[in-house]
Length: 151
Image (tube, rainbow, N blue to C red; front, side):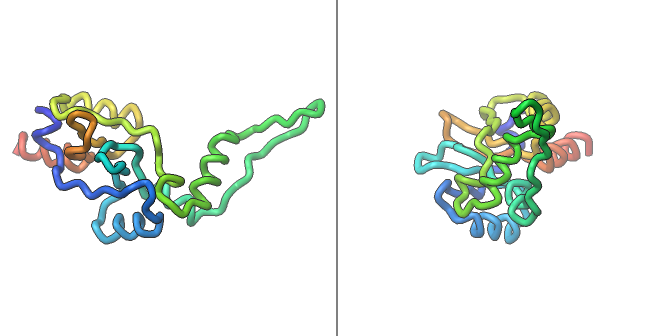
């Protein structure tokens, strides 16, 4: 089975310049947990998920550190903190989205997509043709295909 056979073709997207509040509203109103972020040419430039937006509702925690010989040693990940700060204060999607997006072509076997999702701990994979978004596959799409195949 290939990506094109199970992907959702009516993909709700958002632009990088869109307001974060609008993206959150789109997620809630459509009962979805993530949106591909596309540029004017329909190229996937990021993805914004509930997880990205939840950071805005959380309390920021400064990484714990110690000073040793006039050097600061972080005991937690300062890069993660910097990313969280950006998402915490973001007003536009481009500042809150995840930029590293795993995409697949239409002819990618579903077994490879499952492997990507498991290995990367992601819930959705945009599907592209000629680098342009044509669909999306979620874990739910994969489950539906299993039910159809085995049912």
